Image 1 (cartoon, each protein chain N blue to C red):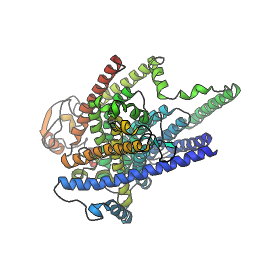
Image 2 (image 1 turned 30 degrees about the vertical axis):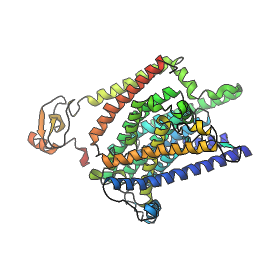
Image 3 (image 1 turned 90 degrees about the horizontal axis):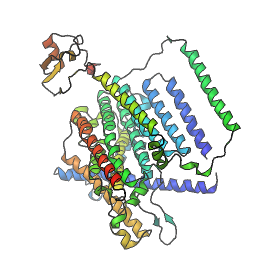
Image 4 (image 1 turned 60 degrees about the vertical axis):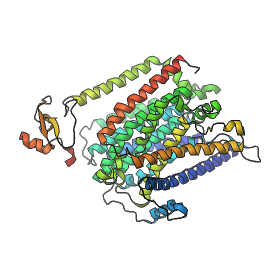
Length: 352
Length: 222
């Protein structure tokens, strides 16, 4: 192994570590924001005691999760029981490496230009879909291995739900792929930088965007599609028997998945790191352009996360048969319609 | 570097395949099979075929195996006890077939080493999406369409099998509380196409109304 490859591997490892730490921090504060915003919606305060306005609450929670007693059910299937939360968290984190968090940026006072993406992959979008689909196993196996009726029902529900909505989710992205002509996420973002940074695919794919947004909520098992953990029917669903740090891993995986689908929505539909007029003001490749773009990207992601929290505070839960018929009879045909329209337009006006 | 990765993922694939066959618990076998698929996907990436790798993970590991795990969970298959093999002739047959397979692989390896062709520089884009798409829709259009018709036939066949003697007539809806369902829902001896409707609050009540004692379809009790 020569020195170049070693240096490359070290640089990638550093980049991955930085990205993971940033993502985990964002996730931690998403949890806090969710509790505060839900509190506001429901006319109460939410956690505001630890640190200024509750800013240290995520760390207090983490400490609590670590210090709690870890109870393993007596008749659980040990190996799978331990494996399930690991699969869930790993599948959630693994997608982070292909997202472009910003443009190529020059480090101040040097001439070194670094891309704000960990790796560019020819099939980046398919990689995301593939790794996300592995995440189902975390929940399904957790439900099976706990040896608990409620867990099993939660796991079954979640497997059925995630398979059903994965179809609509994947199909809603085909329109964007047809417009972009590539599966490389970094290139898809580059293609949206026209019109002074306003050439976003949401203006060409409104239907696909709506279908994606709904299917993504179902994919992450969030309200109003949180049937796998419906507490009125299933105690806590697939994670009924999980406690302490293993429960925290599931919790983490859910919020990382939320972050992931928000990032994907931003990347594919809202122009990724493209901030309107930023390129005209700062010029391409400068440090300030990179900074503004990365902040713009983060703000768009936070916008989606807010929508998630807002929905949770507003909407009641679906019934399971409603959930299934909605996914198969409404979302799937809508996604197909979106593909049909896009394909027709792209075929008739290839230079549009 | 590539050799190291090949050894790692190859060993993982073989190990998972062995575990899949050796496990008695069907769910462990399924998990091992998922391991095989993912290791194979990693091998495809090292062979510069990222598209095949991604499709392998999405289709096999992400969709088909989820359904397999789903079915195993739904039936809640217990650990199969080790019973004596009834079909004893299968073991020597399997060994003979495996020997043939190994011989084939060995033959290919030997013949490749005899007629070594040095790869040209432009081979690395074969596995990319942009070279697969046009080939699939121009040169290999007929096999592609035939494959899709084959899949469609499988779907239609599955639907036909599942619909035959269905428990509820098409269009019937199960509403919590008062329910309407055909006689065959509570009476296993009734004809499947007997659409006599029963109205009751629960399956048990319907069974009492019809004078049917034995419940056959209530899997929640198991």
